[in-house]
Image (cartoon, rainbow, N blue to C red; front, side, top):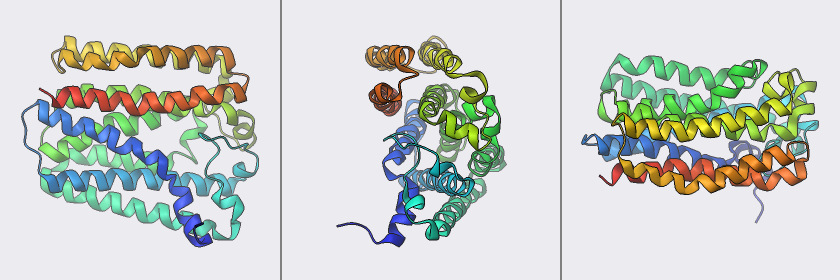
Length: 300
């Protein structure tokens, strides 16, 4: 049964299927604590998950609101992985619902963060401020800079989320968690980069200046290839430095998938219809890699 229009205007901008990325990345924070032999209170784990989900809901909803407000949604050809939910163009009179959803979710995130600052100390404040800044500034400002737009999503789900959540859960900085935060840094940056390929012309028309707009799609192909290589090197580095067990090499079972995705982008970066299946594979890679890494960490 279809949702009522007001609920579509709330839940559509949340982009609920994409929220799977939050537990996949937060699993690394918990697994790093397990690998380090540090106890984690179940209640704290639930609160960390709530804060992470709220942050992702907030950035999604605010992004949908800003894209509708700028007119971008009306110029974008939607795909299963890009172009937004389509909820606001279908119900323009309910755009305020998306804005309210984003702001309310941001308040939940800040509330959870303040609780852990009180519990663990001021060391969490810089990470918390950075995370809130990424949520608030991403669509309207960070998309105007090729480097910031490229690294902001991965930084949010990687170093900010994983290391921040680990400190919230354990009360101390962990090199294990810091190393585990690198795969999401490269994966999520690559995910958002690849998902920008269908939107280059529309993004340019509203003043966005991300990598593909400024330097072209060929540059994006090279950068995504570099991100894939950096992902592999980060896993090797974690093991070599003793901050992860050899078992995390299980993520290299996904290496053939990464190769297929990269080759697909090289061949089809100018043919969006042909590129869409590889965008879907990239989602699978981005979700599966941190899950396998976390399972390997927690198993020892």
